[in-house]
Image 1 (tube, rainbow, N blue to C red):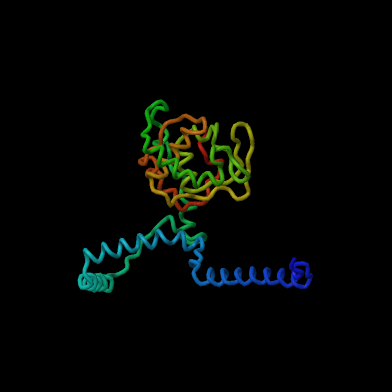
Image 2 (cartoon, rainbow, N blue to C red):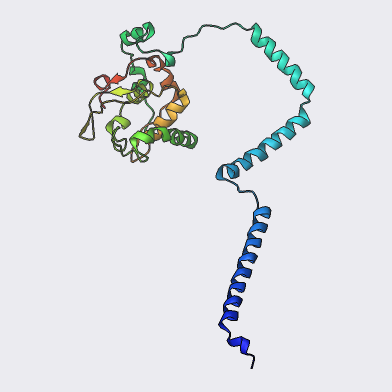
Length: 252
């Protein structure tokens, strides 16, 4: 029998040689992984890849259809036209500066006659264009931030669901959209009085306002006639006036 097998010193040395060999092998693997590993990709890089691919396609299509010479010639023509153009003064009511002479003039203007808008509304049972409802639903995403996704209302806006004002005279909703609203308001028997009030959303087109109001009047349990772009256009002169006081609303 080999007496070296029972030698504690030999066993101790063999053990540490094994441990050392293991760590050397692990270090070699780490060095190899360090040099051959792929470059890390952040979430931003991953999201940018489709944009880079789209840009490459656009650049290739442009290069195939437009030569550098034609682009340079077009740029010179456009630059000459811009240099020769003269600015024209315009008046945009949506850009009225509070406290300006225009703002004061608009505030002092007599109330608009909305009788024609409210006298002959369409029947509540008349079919509504699905495209109008789809457009209105998309525009309502802005409104839902305050009025709730289901028109249930929130901390800074009253409910639209089951509101007699929503189903009432069309001119009320159009004027509120064009001017905003301030003051106490009773909805479905409950009093609301928000300190800030509603901001005007007059930047929307007549079609967009008609669409979102039609959607609101026919959603969340409401059923009323559609709103037309012509009705909105008839009240465009309200744009730029101060927030509409609730006492000026037509009673539903």
